[in-house]
Image (cartoon, rainbow, N blue to C red; front, top):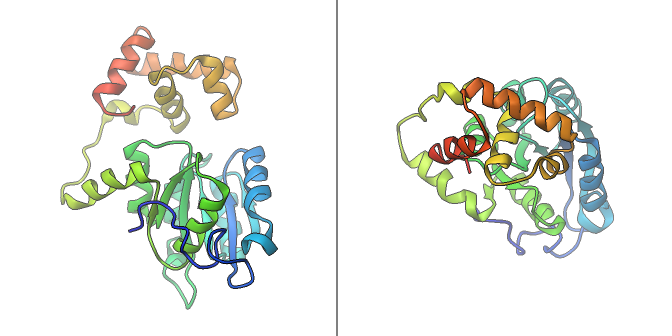
Length: 239
């Protein structure tokens, strides 16, 4: 397990040049502008060694593109229309260890919540980094995952180790299960003190949509205001 991308991994942005290695990558994220930004950052093949061979914005598209292109690495968002990153992993399971060159998955998400990280790692992803990662470090992480190494953003590695050190399955939280994936994202940001406008900017949604999600969360959890919501989230270690 690698505790964050290493500048010594061969072929990445810090690994001595793109001429030595190549990695074929598929980008899976439901925000088109984010995909475009990642491609602009890492997809300069002659400089980085990374070739973006496909993109997808939901689960069905992702499974189709992955099966058609058989990339080295899939950069996978956790929250996607159609079932999320875990569903992509489930439906792509036959490719993950198959053949001479298996498909590897690296989660790339705004979320740093334990249940999101543990969910995709249990599903078969080789690593998990947050969207605050630099382009150079992301390239390094791609090559490490392509080689079969596990890569995590530093603060995430600890609770991944803790989770897998325990033989007990994570308990089911029925209240949390009532929320959609998007509602969970909004919940965490609101609980961290984000204003509605900041939440909208972070998740690429309108303020009105944020307000609708907050209202739905409060109704489903039978809470009265964002202060109660913050206490609820803190009690479950979601923030």
